[in-house]
Image 1 (cartoon, rainbow, N blue to C red):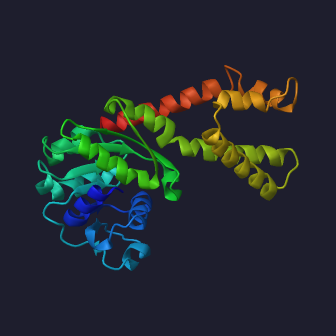
Image 2: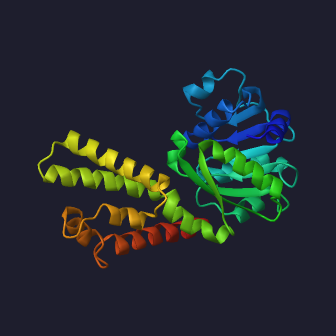
Image 3: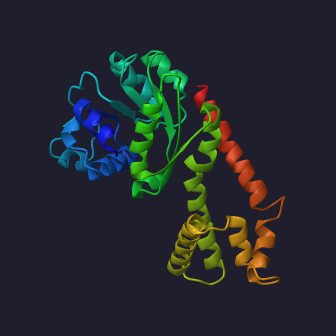
Length: 275
């Protein structure tokens, strides 16, 4: 977190509305970067033991009059109950940053006022180990300074990308927001396939986890793109080629399957946004 951002937050305060796994992961990252607990207000009806143990944290107390930022991290279904209590902070200098899935910027403007600076973000669960990726977009009142502040805050838990507009958020939800679940299911099914070939469940799961985790790390670190990395490990008429014939089949393999899966998630995201 840069010096000016830190100074502004220290002086005016940072509010977390909801602090579950995602909010806690972010808060832990900010505290490690030097944000003092006394500058943080957390409103959460069921605070974790970790939150309760943080000395100096303003837990479920009256909020500051003009906080630098309010991070909205409650479940979408709790939004209607939680946000109106903060309407007095709308149409002002406070930036509202939402990491809640499925809630469009227009919904926040309706609850907080259409002059409110609002940034919508879509993080994913690897944020819990600072390996997430978050996509952000803002409304017309979110300035370049606001976007920079949001990017700085969210970089505490991984990479941050800026979208061309909110119209891309449903697709992002389908790829990276929901994507970790697809990878976890790949690990499950890869391990089960190993068991079907005679491996013990423990050994097969260890092999599957390490293979998927290692391949992902290599894909991020390598200069070659994933297609070339695939070619690099595929000998003509070899074992990998035999497996890829199945996985790359246009009708029954990954191309069709993942296209349909991502479209289903993106369509559901649209449905949630439209109520």
